[in-house]
Length: 113
Image: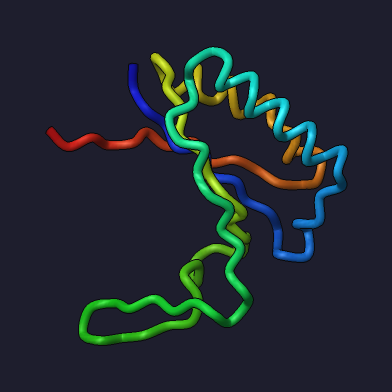
């Protein structure tokens, strides 16, 4: 099986105020993936304080924030096992983040030998 990162995005940090019911729905979704033995890493919630991040680029160029190219807030990620990217997308489609206007990027994780 391959591994895929599911990267959770919201429009901005103000969107990230889930109710207890929404948190339970997310935990149920995560639990269903774990029950299938397809959860590799439950990830981490990435909630940087606005203005608290910098990106260092070649030639010592420093810019604000890690996400200057995108207008969305990355709220977290998980890593799952799946045979194909389509299977990983199917897992992502069941996530409740879509109910609050979020989206999920699915990327295959490259492994080094």
